[in-house]
Image 1 (cartoon, rainbow, N blue to C red):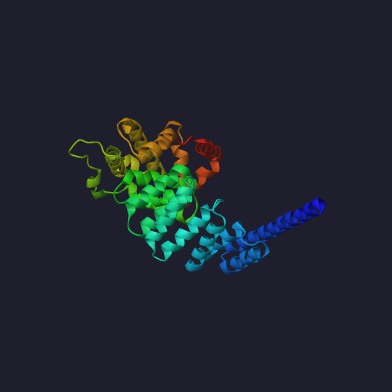
Image 2: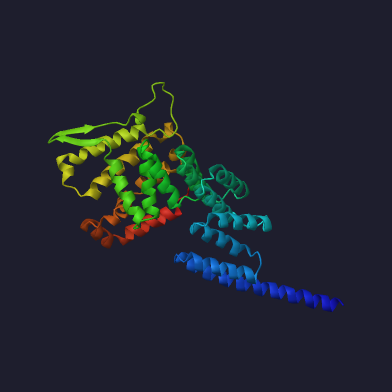
Length: 347
């Protein structure tokens, strides 16, 4: 009797393993279709995987994601709920993202935020939950709350381009230096994409913000009131007013005769060196997320003499002849830069 029971157990164990393997193969085929934009085809593969292996978590996770991407939000919510109910103690990070994201698309904002928080409570080290929660806040015109979420995402995953992009955009109007640092880091993490081209233009615009030539020898510099020091003398969090002022003065020198003949990248290098030098000089008396997490990276970049390499990476999408030539001649410098950046120790 014991032998029969053992054989029966081995049979079911083997059959389960085979079903799981077959389901995984179907899920992988579905993922390939999803990546090609064929969401209906992907969902069909996931359904077949679930026929082979009922309640397969990987199939449910990917199905919820494809349904969400395809705009079938109610269905994505139902699949997500089911996955959570049958797999309460397993890896559900992406299920919570699809679930809350679908609620956000349906304008059920409070419910979406509740699900994000539930997911974060269970998986506090998954950056995508913070990032997507930030998107939810941004979509509902709550930039301050959104920025905090993107900052938490960056703390977990310093290379997450989406969070860097979002911080850069949201800080553009009132906090120029944090925006510049976020976009600069973005261009290192994600060069040569459609987003990098836009962010290079944003970066160049930020450098020239408030600086105009009003005559042959006259430059007008307008200072953003948000950058002025507090009259109470109390130090503000993430105060970059000194660096902001120094950048404006350095940008005004673009019109100087000796700089007007320099290439765009050469002038960028000159100004970025000024920014980094100012960060190093004023870091002692300042505090906040950007001072603790962005400033040290760029200060070390300056001290390691990597600003030139960074600048030519940032301008790689410009198609300027001088940029193309530099890249051809300086592969070694690029390798050194990327090795440093890859091994940089984020605090």
